[in-house]
Length: 70
Image 1 (cartoon, rainbow, N blue to C red):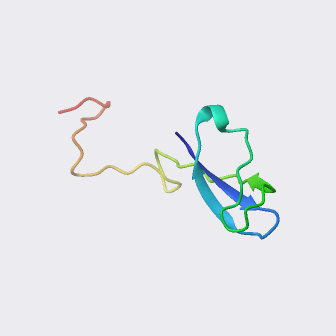
Image 2 (image 1 turned 45 degrees about the vertical axis):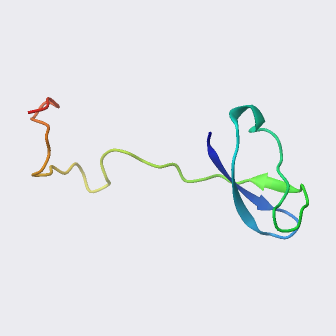
């Protein structure tokens, strides 16, 4: 189940909630004030791969050139 971030439009508090995919479009109540006037926040996606500095090669890597394991 994914973790979503929400913001309460009534009291301004941010909160997180683990939500089933089937309930992802529902609006949860704020745990601080109890109102249902909440908005889903846009979260920064986790990135996997190379950094902006370019690829780096670790000396402890178990991969040989070409992506094959050694």
